[in-house]
Length: 331
Image (tube, rainbow, N blue to C red; front, side):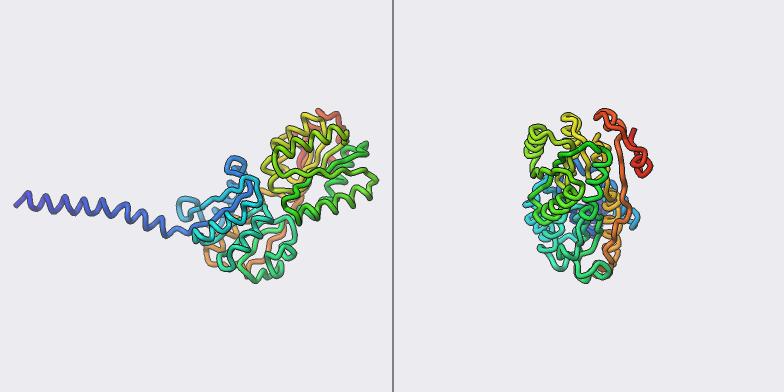
């Protein structure tokens, strides 16, 4: 009799143990899934992912605790965005976050008209066809406009102020994102013309192209380089900053991460803040907000960051007027 009771107890315990993984699995399955579409690869996204997760945390979400993230990486190849966005749609994610890349935002928008999309783009999202208006997006997408295209002329002027003797400048542009490339090219050409500076346009869409562009710069004896705003270039920021230092070419970049990597100067919106805001909106949508009702956020904070150590290495004297306007000077 005793052994019969013991056996029943043992089977009950066994049943409970078998139910545990099922309960854990059910809890996992109940977690909403974010599809994250990144232009680079995991190894060059640490800083930005931390900012994105910080935004999610502000909305009360923690990866692995009450939300799951499925990552798709384009490895710097814009043409892969369409296939990766379609893959996330097939995975039935609850929301697609695509910060920092207009080709990715357009690919997500083309892949679904029902799954909410949170983008981060440097151009006007209305002209990109992502939203109806800034105040009332109206469809399944909203996000952050972080103003990179609008400050091209200003950045070139700041570079000229730092290198007043520069008569020949070059601009590096990624032709793969055709719409942005055309906009940046016309802006930078107009700005160079108004300053009376000769301008050479160089194209690059792979790291080998970047090497070739620097070889051309050295051949043509450019006095300074303007690196166009581009998500792929940002993933190659260490290569670009290193090459500029190696060839002693004063270079202006779109965002401060290049300057942290040893680049000379940057002027533009804060990318880490844009990733954080994208995380906040992603969280709000998972909590029930509709993208159609969330106005596109506009990054108004523009920062000028100068690397004083790099300036010294290049033999440049930073004008006091520029030092006074800098948001940060890295010593």
